[in-house]
Length: 354
Ligand SMILES: Cc1cc2nc3c(=O)[nH]c(=O)nc-3n(C[C@H](O)[C@H](O)[C@H](O)COP(=O)(O)O)c2cc1C
Image 1 (cartoon, rainbow, N blue to C red):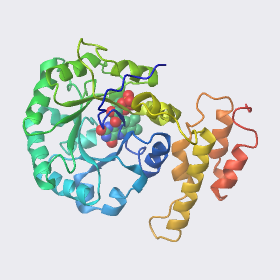
Image 2: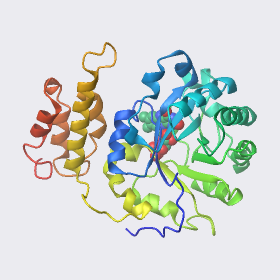
Image 3: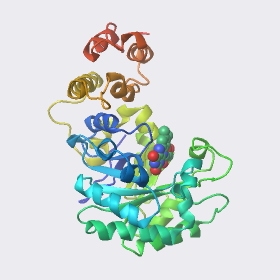
Image 4: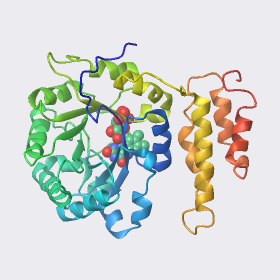
């Protein structure tokens, strides 16, 4: 697999890990950061309601190591979005991303997520309110994640006009999940699988709006697929995407990220080369620190399975991976310290077992 021609300037959005509810919490992001120093990480979606009326610390807390880090918001009311963006700035997030792609019924009842694609001017108003409240792009960019259409709207012009309307208020970064959201009849999971992927729509957006940062998301299964999409002229002559966002593949086969800094950022490996076992040991140490830090806290006590669950794909594809996973998932071991469980998981090295 060849590395790409780097050029002088790489977009900060070159490789991103998608926001994923229940998955990309701070423990997961800490893990992903061990694998790539440069990948841009996203929180799970946090609704404006949860932030404005709930436990801010629980929703916004993160580890310093996670930078560059974006907070993804779900909401549609400009004044609420503005208040939440201010919070994100105070907490030193590097970006606020507005979710215009989630098709779940719960989100539709709240009138945000993918249904906002039919209300481009309301989205533009929300983006502007957030920009005004936070002092503009240099301090903390406000970005949008969206689909290419909703329901039966299959024409390119729909997404082009959506992007155009929002770009008019100064938004410069668009993360495009390259399939429609069907708001009726499909579950969120089916909505990530059934509507067909149309990568060419995303490349057309970059062609039509060369000054915007256009990031492609959806169905990127491995690094070869990522490299192919970032190739100049991959789909349209003279058009090169700014970046990619990877969701499920990054979560299920996280080791793919260990190659990102060299493949996509042109870094030569120097000093310690990453190993799966080294990363696992670092996560064990992190889990232990989190347990010690939170011991005795009435609501916030962290137990190691909440951390380690995110690394269960670490040996995916390797001989012995299943047995290793089984040890880490064994409920009867939960009372042991994580270092002891790691020792058991390696009693026969994953590479040799099975
Ligand atoms: C478990 C799960 C939770 C998700 N939660 C969110 C979310 O909170 N916000 C969002 O914009 N997209 C969410 N998504 C969609 C992903 O961000 C991404 O757009 C989608 O999975 C397509 O990318 P992929 O094919 O690389 O996985 C979620 C996806 C999964 C699998």
